[in-house]
Amino acid sequence: MPGKDIAVLGAGAVGVSIALYLQRDGHRVTLIDRDEPGMGCSYGNAALIQCSSVLPVAAPDVLRQVPKLLFDPDQPLVIRWRHLPTLIPFLLAFMRESRPSRYAANADALAAIVPQSFDAYEPLIEAAGLQDLVRRKGELQVFQSHDLFKATAPGRRMREERGVKVELLGEGDLRAIEPALAPDCRWGVMLPSSYQVSDPYRLVSGLARHFAAQGGTIAKAAVRDVLPLAGGGFRIDCEGAEFRAARVVVAMGAFSGPLTRRLGSRTPLNSERGYHAMLPEPGVGLDHTLISADYRFAIAPVDGGIRLAGTAELARVGAPPNYDRARRLIPLAQKVLPGLKADNPSYWMGHRPSLPDSVPVIGPSPHHDGLYFAFGHGHSGLTLGGMTGRMIAGMVGARRSNLDLTPYSITRFP
Image (cartoon, rainbow, N blue to C red; front, side, top):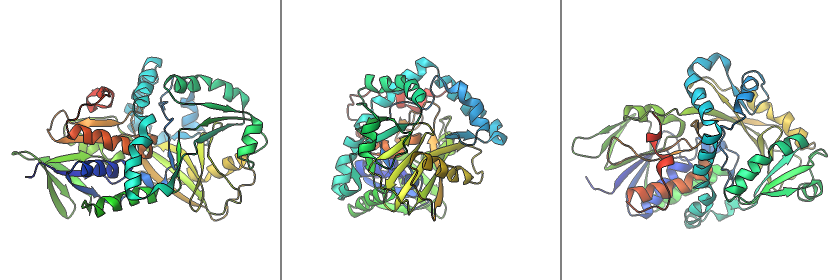
């Protein structure tokens, strides 16, 4: 079996980036997914490469929020209470990670990789000729509550302590750059290191086309199992097909858990179901992606209109979508942008692969030589695609890394 044959399972932003970086190292790569590249979570996200996103979701104040998560449907993250029994292990781990010491350690792990995320993407985007889809405009947090603005100061300090640039804006600054904002949007925070993507699906699918044009193989097949072979390498069992490879990278997002367990490694991976509402005729102009601090979701200018994204829920895997989660975003967005029109909206749901510590799994299996994991990116799948690809390629190539890779190892879970 040729030593450079590698199968990457999953064709989202993470899997496609891994495939490209491995291809650049001279490996023969097969990219396998049940859907076309970019059709999973990469399709409907908030369209940001968030080079400033170093704060974990599990924060010290999370315990106070649990009642709202259970009973307030307007919260950015809700828990379907009837599915609570199956979610308890994840929620207990989430609460453990919300301790101040764990919160700081997880922020450090994110800060070691997130700020470099666009640098890792850039050679892939340039080689594929997709520069027109990405622009460095930052992300603009807007506040309608001064109390909330003051209360979030510790988070801003945490970003700055980890090298993220933070700019405070007053009402006049906000009005100058985004005239459509509501009059009570008086306080703002600009995170200038982030990049807007005009169409995340076009970006990921364009990178996949470049991968194929350079000789890579894309196979549309649903992966059922990965079986280590006695003589080395792996057999990938798919519906209606079978593949063999010397090495395998599991990058199947929220669907990685069952396969990973069969390969000897357990994780508290959970599907955090993300929703968006797409408004094709918004009636207002928007130059920056807005993050409503009060309602905690994104208002993103993308090709074809304005996308409202960020709301999520924890529910049993396989539960039907609840598109009311997406519909609720529209009146909230109109509180931020009073002129926003909601004619002919469309709705979408995807599965974010979430881990309690917000730190992705990136690294080798402790049980099988040649097996690697790359999943659990949560809200940062688009952001960390390029960085994950660079890291996995470095591990496969046994290159020395300046990073401490321990925080990303799957062995951190008992």
